[in-house]
Image (cartoon, rainbow, N blue to C red):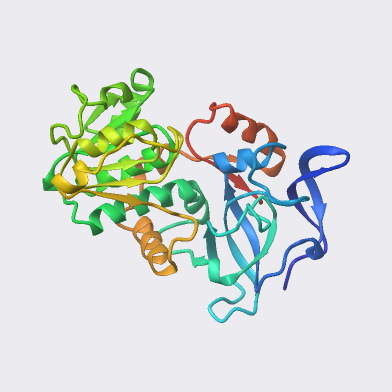
Length: 334
C-alpha cells in the first residue's frame, strides 16, 4: 500500500495570475521526495500556518505549496530503517510546512529522521491538540528543570499565558506542583480560565516592570517561561531569584530588549533559548514521552479540541490571523 493516485490537500499558490489558496486534488507525483509516506490523520492550526495562507506572510519559500507545520498519522510506505507500514507517527518542526510540503493534506511524504513514533498515552488527535505550541511549552519546562528549578524554589512566571505556549506551560507546571503566576494582557477576561488551568495568581502584563528603574530589582521569580520577548524580558531578568532561569521561545513583544549584564553576574541567572524546530531528536522523543505521561496537559485538552476539515481551513486560518481563535484547533483528514 502506498499513496493513492488522487487525494485532497490545501494548497497555496502565487504566480503571474496572483495569489490563491484552497482545497485541490493532487497525485503522489506532486509530493516531495522522502523515505516515509504517511496517511495523515490530523494536523493542527498555528499562527505560522495562518501566515502561510496569505501572500505576504513570509513563511512559504516556493509555490505551489501545502502548508501545515504539524502532522500525525500512519505510515503507509517506508524505506527508513526505523519505520514500517502501520506505525503511528507524528512530526513537528524541521522544514515541515515551510520549505517541505506540510500536514494540510490527506497524504504526506517526508524524511523519516523528522518523525517520532506516537507514544502510548496520546491519540493522534491529542498529539495535534498539543502540537508545536504544547511541545514548545514542554521544552521550556524541561530546560528550566534541567537547570535546577524545583517547586520549593518559589513562583514561576509565565508570560503570554492565554496563548498556546503560555496556556500549555501553565497546565504542565501545575501538574508538576509549581506555584504559577500567569501574566496576560487579558486579565479581566481570562483570569478564571487561567486559574482553572492551574495558575495560582493572574497578573496584568503591566504589573511586570519593576517599581524602580535600574540594573537590578528585588528577587521575585524562581523561573520564567517567556514566549513574548521584547522590552519586558529585561525586567523579568532583573527580578529572577539567585540561580534562576528564564526560558525564551517567542518574539511577539519584539526582538530587542534593553538588558544589562548585572543580573547574570550578580545573581548567577540564565537566559535559555528554546527552539522547537531543530530540537535534537533525543530530547524531542523524551519530551513527547513526558507529554503522553506525567506531563500530559490534561487541563488544556479536557476543555475540548475544536476539529475542522480541510474545507473549513480558509475561515479558520483567517480567525487565527485576526486574533479571534480560542483554544486549540486540529484539522481532521478523515
